[in-house]
Image 1 (cartoon, rainbow, N blue to C red):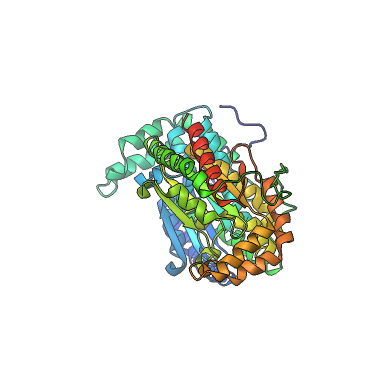
Image 2 (tube, rainbow, N blue to C red):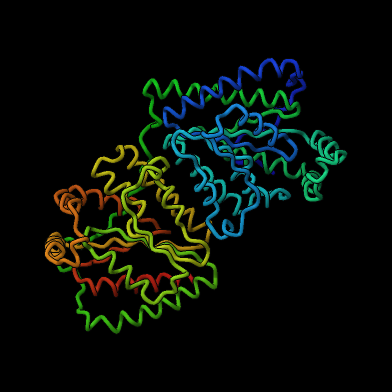
Length: 504
């Protein structure tokens, strides 16, 4: 299989007869290395730096032993080991990267993956000799995932343990001779062994495609297991110590200006305080009832065809997000949807990448997730209020576009994004109404009044958000919401129309 242009071979010339360590040398060297790694773990915990260690390689290459040797040096209270096998039933109906996003470590902890997104992407392709659409899509998802985490401060070390076909056969046969390990060697493993020559270029190319400057592969000759362990320790210690030195010196993760997506400006109808639609409850009621019934039928079809859907609402305070969500969900089966109200992140959420708390709630196949505010808080309230750096919110535009595209392409699902627009005058009227109504006073807070004082700053952020994240695959729909009932009709009509196309 030809390599992609510019993608270097990763596996050739790795195996070398000189890569050997005798047992005496191993015993002498491993102790000091383990002690040093334990010290580094504590330093990372104090510096609140998350670490991901990936152990990959050929079957029988020593992943289990190498992983065991590494965790033997670590405080078990500071790491989590994830042994990644075939996906569970719940994971199969989620986006491909969902089960890895949900396992990323918080700041100061280490996550070790014995097998990872790499194996799970390539397992179905092991006997193929050409790229497939799914494999190419996995490469994009993986590179986006790793870039987003490393740019956010995570240190990622990826190891691939390499053995040749003859060594793999020798290890399989040795395991079969022992009653304690014979059960590990299955017919499926022998089938993969017989396809080694076909698998080699696929794996080699895949490694090259996912070998990036921000998350490089460390390919290690695993013919001699003691040498393998020492090589892993040496790489871990060197990389982690360099990271500590760079962070102590004040070096940031930022590597140049973020790549901002192109602007595609959207009109928000701000010139007309009454917007372009108006109707009363009596006029809109019958239409709304009809659309709500269609929404129930639409939900049933999405469930039957296993198509997930995300509906997210952003908008000015008091723009009517809650009323819109209530009308959309009124006739729907509650077992098939979730409404996720998004508030300020708690301590656990702040210790992870900002996507983490949202991806946890991504819908499984056939289900609907409705977000009352969303990941767009990074480029709105966090930007305006200074809760993140300028580099972080600028970087977020590309991250968001990539994440949304990955959800759609990996699941066949859809994302509907609504911006609810109201005039400044209408917002003030609703604020005062809430303040004076005992049944609605809980809806108005000091934060709402403070945000209103920054109206002009929010307008700049809103316009840029809409322009930079209005993509072909996940466009924005702006709803004029000075008239609540017209907005509700318009929103549900947009949902049902979108779903009809999704179901075609």
